[in-house]
Length: 421
Image 1 (tube, helix red, strand yellow):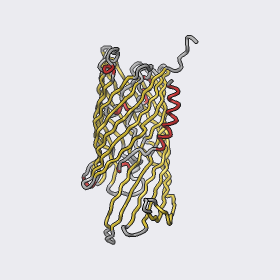
Image 2 (cartoon, helix red, strand yellow):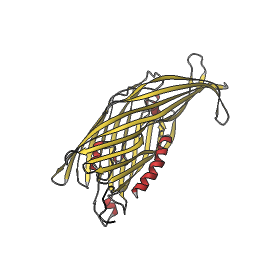
Image 3 (cartoon, helix red, strand yellow):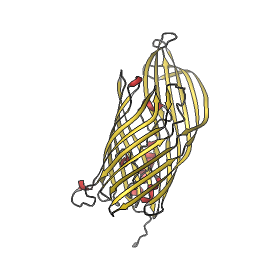
Image 4 (spheres, helix red, strand yellow):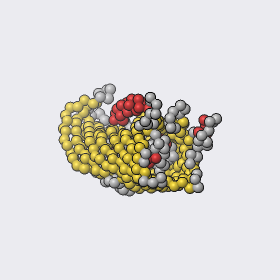
């Protein structure tokens, strides 16, 4: 059954992944957009904690965890979110529903492999304002819009060296287009100037990971996890189109004159990243852990313009989280078999605008709901997250967001030789 589900959903979701607008944040203008993949639904429900090797869930944050899987696993997840954007003078709301990942993992004794795809970063914003020129005193109306992002396909493998220690590596290929457009006009003047910049990115990278999990007193576990991602090079080509446009009553832009040019063709860099975490728990009962991530400063800065008030610093993130299962093997109470999750996160994104750090903090809750009649603990995972990013200082935007994420983890046994025909 799982094979048919995988075939159908992979076809559907791969189309969705490359066509949807995945973001609604003015901060996605910088770099290659916001990093959208923050872990599976199970991880995000624990504040983004990604240190756990799991026999029935694929952990896409550390490739070394793939060797812990006992069943062939198909995982898919998505998010619907509502964001309130506020400045000192105005406010607005935006919503998005997006695919987060689709993956398949296969166990082979001491080896585990996984592959899949995900929208990795996303650009998505629509901003308008008016500004009075210091030179001629005229008021100019400006509209800004951006879309696109990077998609990622990946293939990883892990090997269990001992019962406690596993290592893994993952190959990644990133590709995608980012488009930004601006329209500037003077009220009462028929024509406006439109500029469209389109960048195409592609490039490969990899990461390596390790996990160590010791059994203490035959019922407690101590887990240590580490992942390192080297700097990634992306080949990028950027083209620019500048036009004189007239806007109709319905909002349609009529192009009068247009000049196209290629403004750059070079390599861009995604910064290196290192993550380490540890946790303690009781097998199939509870777990609590902490994880810390540090990332080098983004060398890409802004794609097109030289903003002297914007810079990137090294970023960092700390996650605290865990889960609780009242009674894993209960036959009388479904509620006792549910996995309850919770977590906190605090992230210094590294983006600094007008001297203000753009930070992100949030709290999350979640539940893993066992699916009756399935093999190997298949389940439906649901999570909620409430958080705040940015600030209203220096005329910037504060984002208050509420997200609901849903994931499906289906398990089955493949490559088992039949004893009876």
